[in-house]
Length: 373
Ligand SMILES: Cc1cc2nc3c(=O)[nH]c(=O)nc-3n(C[C@H](O)[C@H](O)[C@H](O)COP(=O)(O)OP(=O)(O)OC[C@H]3O[C@@H](n4cnc5c(N)ncnc54)[C@H](O)[C@@H]3O)c2cc1C
Image 1 (cartoon, rainbow, N blue to C red):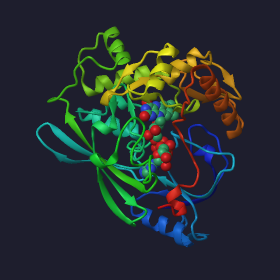
Image 2 (image 1 turned 30 degrees about the vertical axis):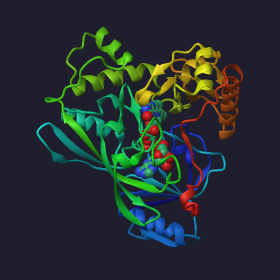
Image 3 (image 1 turned 45 degrees about the horizontal axis):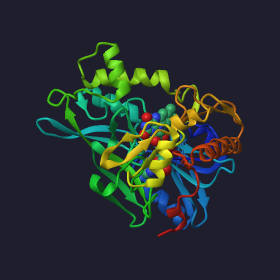
Image 4 (image 1 turned 45 degrees about the vertical axis):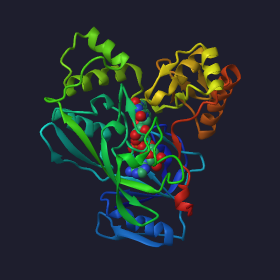
């Protein structure tokens, strides 16, 4: 493990905002995790040899708050920074752990870069995550909000995760059925158990593309791209490349532009929710049918209707390509983001009656680190 002190959250997150974290401990092996949690809970010393072989020791007090971070692509730092320890997942590795005639189980360590993982699967002609190309972040964060794009979601292919249970203080295996996965919500980020598990690795069940090639129709914008480019070979690598090209046109590259991707969640509701149905119909937005009989309207369409697409608010740009995305063009602080967010959410509420919700997570002490049961 590597121990750092006073590191700006703006350097750890793709929105590039936020004050200093008191400690950052980089996890290079899953076996580092129990020691870090034990140290944060009980206080005392945590140490390891630095590059000169000297032991670097940091000391903390009992009940130091902690927060787990991967690539910082769905997290926002506040101006006040973080008063405890950021547990930064850097354990890497990809492995094929089981095969049958037409399926494979592929393991990714939590700190592995997500797109490198997808590329690995595509290079092996495995199918199941190819449409999740180029999503920034890590393998370990993928189950947390059930990442999805262009018609695929990790909930369709995750078999299980391995995690450190910070209440029972042991490593556990959690199967897909226990993860309560729906649109951007899972056991890991919603409800009483949110924040309890530190995911150390994920097992995915994928198809061998030779046996189970994906078939059209694909997600509308992907299908359009395939048709326009006369692509009829739906191999994992062709689909990966198509999605990568579409994303290049539409979505900001975190290396060039600071953002957290979609800043607001789309609006999901039950068809028998009369109030929501009424508001949705009144808004004039398309009402989409989604799995499990749910309905959805696109929050980006509402933001566009409200005339905010492309607007620059307190240094935050509402993307002119996808209005769900806020780009940090020259915001000076979290306070600027806060002001921009308030303008957008208030306008949507005043004009359409919807209370829209933020997708990225704010870096505040994990409630389990404060002893919540
Ligand atoms: C340009 C851009 C485009 C994007 N496009 C998409 C998209 O198409 N679809 C989509 O779904 N998302 C998208 N996102 C959001 C983001 O890429 C995903 O949410 C991704 O999974 C975040 O990974 P991360 O490692 O950066 O997570 P972080 O931001 O580091 O963490 C996110 C959350 O997961 C928790 N967490 C992280 N690692 C672990 C772990 N090992 N164990 C337990 N909890 C953990 C954190 O505590 C936090 O609550 C996009 C973001 C950007 C910037």
